[in-house]
Amino acid sequence: MSPARANKKVRGQIWFVGAGPGDPELLTLRSVAALADAEVVVIDADVPADTFLARCPSDVEVHQAEADAAANGKLVVREAKAGRTVVRLVSGDPAVFGPYAEEAAACAKAGLPYELLPGISSSIAVPAYAGVPLTTSKRREVRVLSAADVAEAGIVEASNATVVAVDAQSVLPATAAAFVAGGRDEATPVAVTWHGTSTRQRTVVSTLGSVAADTKDGDTDTPAVLVVGDVVGQRERLSWFETKPLFGWRVLIPRTREQAAPLTDRLRRYGGVPEEVPTISVEPPRTPQQMERAVKGLVNGSYEWLVFTSANAVRAVKERFTEYGLDARAFAGVKIAAIGEQTAASIEAWGIRPDLVPSGQQSSEGLLEEFPPYDSVFDPINKVLLPRADIATETLVAGLERLGWEAEDVTAYRTVRAAPPPAETREAIKSGGFDAVLFTSSSTVRNLVGIAGKPHATTVVGVIGPQTAETAAEFGLRVDVTASTPNALLLADEVAEFAANRRDEMLEAGQPFRRPSEMRRGARRRNK
Image (cartoon, rainbow, N blue to C red; front, side):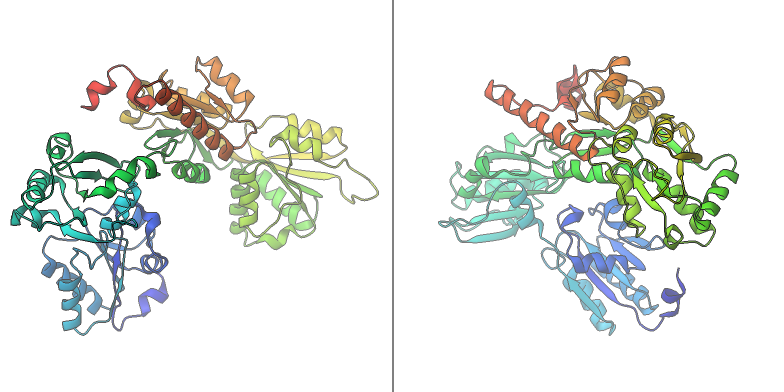
């Protein structure tokens, strides 16, 4: 814990934070700030801990909330009295079918300061993600009920209002029967949604009379949201989330999580479920003397250009600078080139703007096409520093020498094959459990096959360029998508377009659309 946090021990702050319906991107900005300052988090069991706790400090103390609001209140009060910043993280909105009233009363009784940061209630967000508007120009009244209360009461008043019943799944038959007993027609449309706002979302449209039978295979342990009323009829044309081109697709990315972050974000935008499987491990060079001399040369002004070919190279140089107590000012007078948008972004995150990034092909060849030849009049120094991997090709060195430069190729890091992924991941790769795999280099193809085996024939294969496509073909893989430009984000865009076209073709042919993982032999039987 930092000294600043350790020294502020007077009276703790308590935040009641609404986590929303499940998607961490729906948090309010103030809620994100509260989590970033938390010393203790008391979290509901149905809040996905991994994604939300990632926003907290690494030393945060986590407690699982109990079903008893009084016990949670005592815990929050105890930690706050010890001078700690406490976040009570509640599913949905704490003040809507939540424990806020009881637990906040305990804080008020103890004389402790607290604030409520509302979250998006599942009663609002889940229907919206299911494509069901709760109001229209003709339907202005909405009622939000607890499904358990409806089922236990056995009857609800007759009305044409749209009704949202939360936590419906375990009592769904009784809830539907109560609506009918209260005067609603059995033909009244209903929509039931599980795992709302997540890429696991599933919605069933039915009627009050048929919904119990139509949802009998649903997960009775998973909270569901039931919408009753004519507005359900809007779903067919307003369903925007579940119709995303990669909705629910499990996409394999053979890269480290750090390297794959922009790509995974883009895939999630299309509704995909990315899963990173590292195929290489980046390690320091066996002997550090080369890098030590290179860093000394940078400081002494021995190089005219510094060329970064990967984000790993940027990271390796930055780590060595930090070790020596240097910062970006040591690059004064040195021109910097970068291959690839991610490499350039890594440099810019260091506070440096690259002088040259290829405008065309993002490769050694693309850089050489735009790299200036050495000019003894305008270039006082003819040396170029290349901090790279131990397995880098000679293409760039040879090309720079042809342009008149003296290239100093330095091993900044080593790449070794990563350990095999868990057995269940290997089985999913080989059996077709992944809907797509995106290869961003030839080495990712070779290393993935080496540590986990070949992807199943039903898996959609996307590659970043022709060379990667050739490598995939050598291993007997059918390439479905080759990016028109070697760019990982563009590859994601074009795989999404491929998926959308496939869906449209199947629907036009009168076939039900299924993801690739659902089309492999035996998949439907195993999914039941």
